[in-house]
Image (tube, rainbow, N blue to C red; front, top):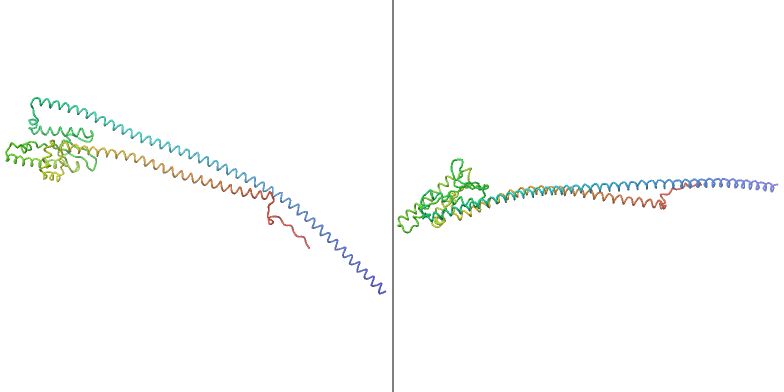
Length: 389
């Protein structure tokens, strides 16, 4: 009985064990089925997400290409606009420069024409005066044929003064421009000068007075006369020169109207040479009185210098005008350079922007290529949930 009971117990236990084994197998199969369903669901969701990602990336690629094309068109339009503005500005600057150069050329030509006209007028005047001189020489020759010597003509004091004035007038008229001098000029105080030169500052107005101390000079150099007469004539000559220097200094140096010096014109070279050769005290006294002694020869040198001063002053006036125009032209070129620098900066910036956009486009295209070829890192892929154990 015991053995039977043990056998029955073993069979029951085996039945229970078998029942448990069958129950566990069913649960395992159920879990495997659930895991298979989850894997299928995850796979379908993964494919759906990949399709959505591809659609999103295709949309982004399309938008990016559109944006790049838009940027390129805007850059092209900006470059074309800047190029057109630059061309217009350069054209405007060239037209302005040509116009101003034309104005400068016109003014220069106008002044040259006026200068030529004045020169022609002066030459015609000189020819007329030379004709008058020729006639005067003919008259002198006629006077010589009538046995009227120069000594007799110059024996009278007024005749000597007229001779000196005529010689002075001829020299000044032949050497100086018409509007740069005045003959027999009268000042506000009633003083009349034989000739006045109008020179630029600081020289100003210079008076010239003709003096011809011929009578005492002839007696002084007359060796046929006695020593006492010659000595007396020498003293008279010295006194005459001193008187002339004093008169010229007091009458023709006018404060506020004339220069601080005046000129005494001596028509005879011999008298001038005698003063400078044997009377240095008279020369020093004249210099202290600001009276400059000149002869016909030295007078020509003085007039030549005065004419050069006038010409230099006129040239300086012309140079001032040209300098002003060149300064304006320089300012225009300066503004052109500044605008050109700004335009170059804009073009350079646009070029850098295009280069940056091009680099970005290449990077994005590279990313799209990798995505298209499924070259994704493991971290970027979606992960599956692990099954329960």
